[in-house]
Image 1 (cartoon, rainbow, N blue to C red):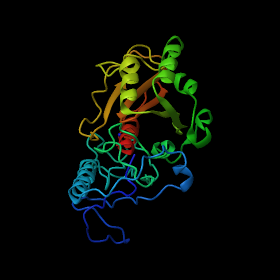
Image 2: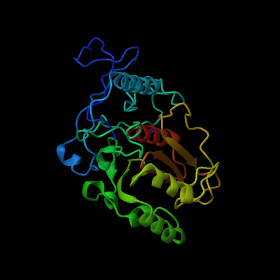
Image 3: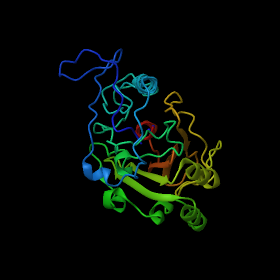
Length: 309
């Protein structure tokens, strides 16, 4: 787990459900509502270019098909749209097979409204892969029962580069900070929480001026090999790729690398993942004493990937 047009292309019409909301064909669950974020969030979005002329009908058809395909792909996770493993009672998520498998309950995820003329990040008319949505609107919300981490409660979820770099070994931070400064960094948003079982989650969205700058930073520092090039703090050794992550949960036009710290470990078991999505790079870290469960970590990665896609 994935910027948008000013309006999400309509899904194919289907009869309304019992509560009046449309249902997606062949989906066993009702789709969550897609609602607009407050206007205040839109103030933090990048400025789109001049409004473009209306696009041909064929382009509209392709957009509808693309969104429908995304819905069908993530419907296999037991959800009605591409945004949600939010119901702990579902049992049809591949690899998450039991009712009490540890999934968390998230709020209904929303699609932010974009300025007029703004394009989706992977639209042909948006070669830089720019997300025009507010960065904080693209952050995965905290699940039910969580307590926010005070160090990540900045204004509109904004944090400094130093706060982001604090997740890495101290000797690496100077070079990384210089590359962020010289490499087109725009801003960083973050959210973190702890759960009653002491599992800690921290998510950072790092936005650059274009996808090219984002990819260069990842390639220079974060890597994408069979093991993490640069481990985050708390990891005893370079962690390998998490082979238990459900590979079929791919979001088109995005890339993700998911790592699981191998035993023997220190006092904390740390899992982390990177998501590349156009101009934005996401870092997701989840840790817990002794052993961090895989299910809520995979769930967070899938959902954040979908929000960025």
